[in-house]
Length: 303
Length: 274
Image (cartoon, rainbow over all chains, first blue to last red; front, side):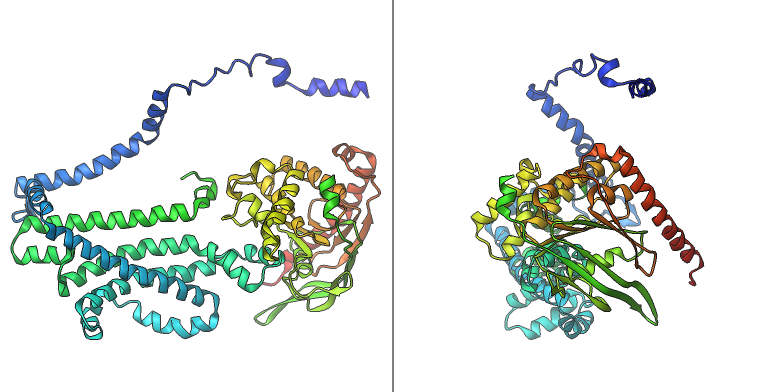
């Protein structure tokens, strides 16, 4: 048997612990104590992506600046487009007035109301449709007919349906947001892993417990996808409604600027809409990250 | 050791009588299981081994209560199995931890479903996790852990409801060879402490011998019990035993039995009408 062991030893070509005794000890200690180093690491890791982001925004601004400066006319006409400087001047003038803030406040209130109702209704009805075949068979045909109608096409009907302008604008915002939220929720229920449901059942969960403890948290990622898309459509719908039937609001501000031939204000309105939409989507993403901390680790990714 | 004893594993006898299972799809029907009879005695570790697609997972599904047999019956302690329940702990082939719960919350899940008080739940979960050497990870999310750890937590979670039997469906199938053999040692150590009845499904011959008191061999479709083999190796089992002549003899024996079936399974695939 010792012969055998000796023979086996001859088969080992190299072995870390025997042939290279100094290797482990000779690794230099990490110099992570220098705080500058952390900053350098961060810039190195994110630098390229920041640079590209800056290039993207700068490119857009440069295109706008050069187009208006040289009055570019090549398929699109820059002759009437205000310069960035004119828009900035307008922003400073308008920013000082409370009217502009009132417009922003009105738009935000309409978004919160319409989007809030769409979230409550879209998620709860979506869960019911996803869970119960009967509810699906009952509701889906009607929803499928209504879904392709763009929110803006609801404007005349909405004015007829609701007692005042304000409610009808909120309703149109709701119509825009509710379908993405609802359909993503329905899809989410179907995507809940059957193995998780079986695991829950074998651990003694009743159907009601399965719903609260597995299906509900399981659809959350899909719900948040729906909320993000719904928020985008809500803004589109809100601005359209405000332009047509509004009083106050950023959409109204922008359309009024057009009527009054105040071109810098048009661009200011557009940029305001862009920034507000971005902030709202960002808020949804942030809430999602807090509500679902575990998602950061799914698929092995630190995102 | 104290934790294990305080958990007081209860008797669990599984009996499968003449089970048949037919899958109907459209106008074709496939006989998945045919007249399968087997048993697991209390405190016994029993494996079922067979070629892939022979219906062994379906049989486990019947014992878990997810699948209804077309004929015959399965019982636990004489009571017919009709639906899933916490008295039968299931360890799945796929990772089945709830990704939104921490490791400890996953282990507590079954007790939470039975409205066990929070302090008791925590006590049981902490005890089991420390037994499995996973205490340091109790606040991690499953997706932060390796496949081997996830499956260990899956086993611990199944044990937390104090089941009469553990049903394991190729739990190490997705793991690499090294992790797999470590997991087998951990499982046999844990079994040694709990002495719970286990029904274990695998297609790995060495694994089935290393872990089991008895091994059933299943035929290719339709799945039938082709042989039942006793594993007379002493307990507790150690990794060193896998190179003993007795172990190798058993491997040879099972290999011959399985080989015929794998050939049969392949030839039926080759000649099966499309």
